[in-house]
Amino acid sequence: MKIAKNTVVTVQYKLSDAQNNLIEDGRQPMVYLHGGYENTLPKIEEELDGKEAGYANTIQIEPDDAFGDYDPALVKVEPRARLPEPLEVGMQFEGMPDGDSDEEAMIFTVTDIAEDKVVLDGNHPLAGMALRFDLKVLEVREATDEEIAHEHVHGAHGHHHGDDEGDDGDEGGEGDHFRSHPIH
Image (tube, rainbow, N blue to C red; front, side):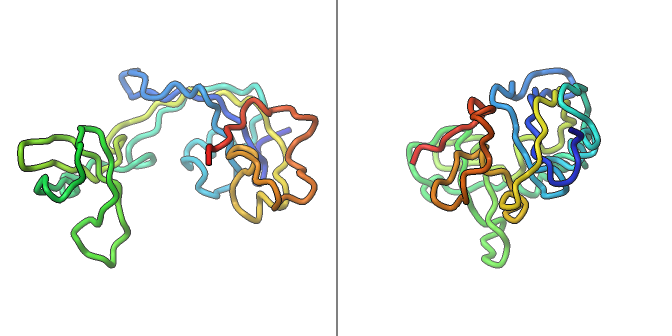
């Protein structure tokens, strides 16, 4: 079966930077609904469109098509007292870009800690980087009507019991080992 709009694609991937330093080893395959639902980067969809299970390729995605350029304006210095303790570099907080409540909350990563000040970076950790994806298509299936209506895959996020008519995402249990069940 070919990858097309409203198919569910299981992709094994490795993510590296342009110098081939591994960023994410993709032990858990990515399972997404194909067709412009913003479930993955558009360039990945473009690459996989029309392909079948078994297809493998490495693609490089420039910052413009991935997480954007690095924006120094998104780095803020905050008084340490405003943030919860214990603080560590690498922790993430949600906050407003400029204390302006009209804007959407952003994720800030702590990049530096001084005695009374903390540096928060609102850039995506992968902003400004060209990304190299090793992709291998493991499985392609038709999406269920419900998945299309909700614009994302259900099986991949643990099955929601109770709101599925007849639990139709599971043919004979194949692919079960890809499912990660959230711990409630």
